[in-house]
Length: 139
Image 1 (tube, one colour):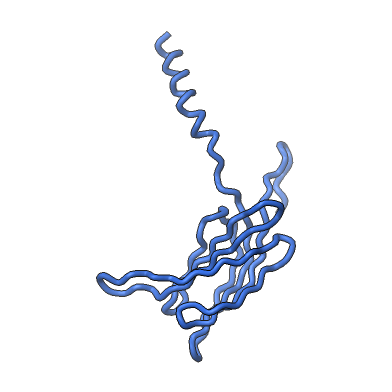
Image 2: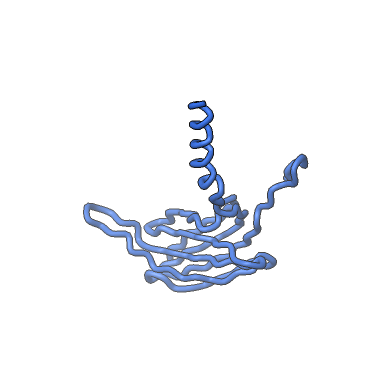
């Protein structure tokens, strides 16, 4: 009887945790260029990430962060942040950020100025769909 009560207690405690949804997975294809004077740094990649989780790259003296967040009806926002990489004791990372609205049907292209640089990029975001039960995932 004690083991049944313990099993019910564990089940009751586990249920609320199971109900929490993980962030929606998204597939991103992107290329971003940071230009400062005659120096240019470019990164391009494709990755599966969770909605709201940053994609980070260090490009020369700059740290780039891209954060796609899924919205309703195939829309999303993309937060782009750029800042100088902090060096030395007491150095603080102080990025500048911009937010862009995107639609999953089209690539999002952006150009902006942050921390004395020109930041240009393009990104395509698609929601990763789980296959129906018993069906293999599409490549």
